[in-house]
Length: 127
Image: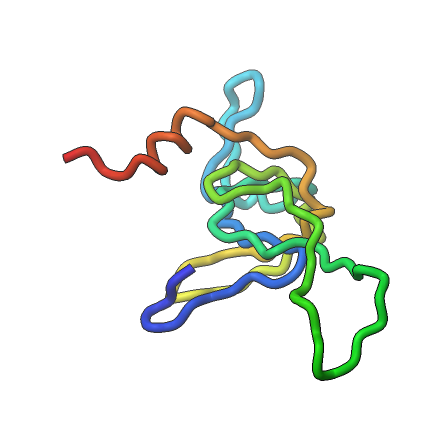
C-alpha cells in the first residue's frame, strides 16, 4: 500500500483492513449507532493489503552466506475481500489520516469475496 512516497508493507500472517464504520442494522431493521457497534465482539472491513503468509522452514540448516529465499504458507485473504474478524485481536493504526486495523490471519472468521468485482478491477478502468 502506498503512503506518499513510501510503501506500507504488511508482514507475516497479518492483513490490513479498512474497517466499516457508522451505523449498522439489525435483522429486524433497527438501526444501531456506531457507539453500540463498537461493543460488538466481531467487526468487518475491506482488506487493503495482505502479508506474505506464515514463514516455514525447509528443514535444512543453512550458513550465513547461502541463505535460501524464505518460504511462506499462502494466505486465504486477498485484497478487496470483506473480512469479518475478532475485534479483540485487531490493532488499530492511523495511516495518512485513515483508520486501519492490522489483523492476524488466524483472527479472521469469514471472508466474503465478490469474484465479478475482482475480475472487473483486475481488467482496469474502462476507456
